[in-house]
Length: 68
Image (cartoon, rainbow, N blue to C red):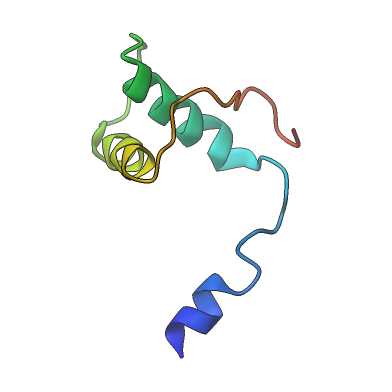
């Protein structure tokens, strides 16, 4: 029953939202091996990058603007 609640409308919204700009961009930089500076600890971003690699994300999506 819990999966139905968590995955219901998972595809909405269909555009990039606030946290995806930051975390998606950092994950793409980890995957591509690009240097960047961040003041926060990296564990969450490393885990997001790892899950992206597992599911085939190549780090090529531009998370530059909200609503794209």
